[in-house]
Image: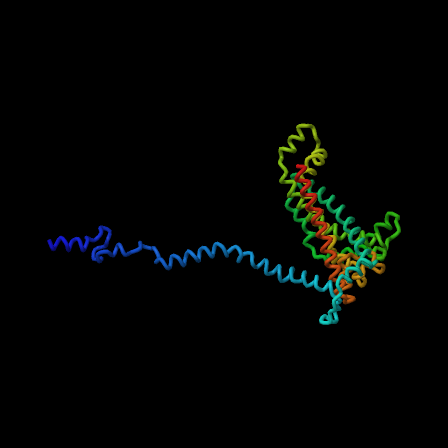
Length: 342
């Protein structure tokens, strides 16, 4: 009787228990490879923290760089635009309110720079995009060495602004330039490209056209290659030739891409700076002797770094920013209307 009670008090070891294990050791074990409860909770918390925090850690460098080099200067420029600040005396600031903006609206130089920015933008953007569409249409066909031609299209874009502008300065030189030599060859009087109103704007625009046409052509080419081939086959069955296919199939399918390139080119024209500055030489910051090709970028540079009026230069910068916001809103409205029409 006593032996049976002892057997009940001490159950037999499990079949899974290794020989020599103490009774109940298998029950006390939490499973092979299973961490203790405290370690498991710590790992689960670490896992949850990793899943929630890792995405923010990955994108944090962008926001840090953006805040340090874009957001802070933007806000600081807004603060400067409301003060009278001179480059030679940054600590001697005085509150000006909206006086800098009022002075801009009453300044003939500001309106001249705004008009020059608009005209140079139109002269450079319209031919540039038209030629880009034509080049992309040619590259869209199976040509020999298509990869080489695409690299050639990107060569002007890869060229530095300084190198390209200096070459065009030699081409448009009054004495001995190739452009005037060609004009004289066909019986046209030479043009003083730096001093002429429309001549100087055309010369600056030609630099922009040369640098950005190939870049936009590759954008159009990528959009054209995404157009379904079935549309062209259906048009060919209906009797449409290649020109009719281009007008009635390619152009409608390129509307979003054309809108994108127009907006990007407009933003680039608003910020145009390097080409007219280097083209003008000594008087580059003034946009010529009569300010005939002074853009908003040059006007801001002239006020801020040549004259030293940082308050007015900051007001010009924010005026350019507001113009770009207006362009972005117009682009948004047009894109919505295009989506509804489709």
